[in-house]
Image 1: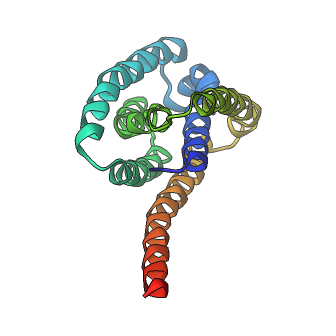
Image 2: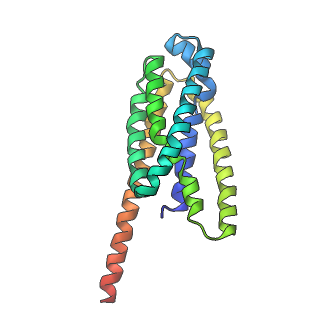
Image 3: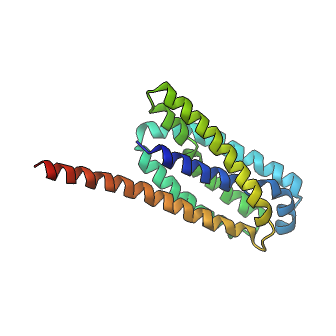
Length: 194
């Protein structure tokens, strides 16, 4: 099972990256892409939510058949790649298409919390996890709001997604090596007993 710490760090980073620039989309779309920022922000949000609504249950079905760790590692590597592409977007429709592709994979990460809670037998642990989840989500929104206002002032604010891509890579490596280190520990214990 994926560790609780990993799930909450992953959710924190995902939520922060998603919310970071979103309050500033109307002005950013107008200034950077020379479109009607307010209208295009509405269109952008509708398209993004439709992708999440469609993809989340699909990922839910796939997670019943596939190994959760492999899905999460694949999703993190894909989100890292797509965030690098997103950081170079130069048109509104390029930004929109890349964001939608990002959400296709990011939608699987939204299921980490239900996966975590579903694996818990103890009701007290579930209540504690729910409290932590609410804390993580709201803290991510606060952090994103604080830093977003500074980042939008950058000459190239989309470059911030490269940092989030790096964070996704680190999380993927963490998950891969954690599994490998667990296997090494088991082998070492086995040889010690013999």
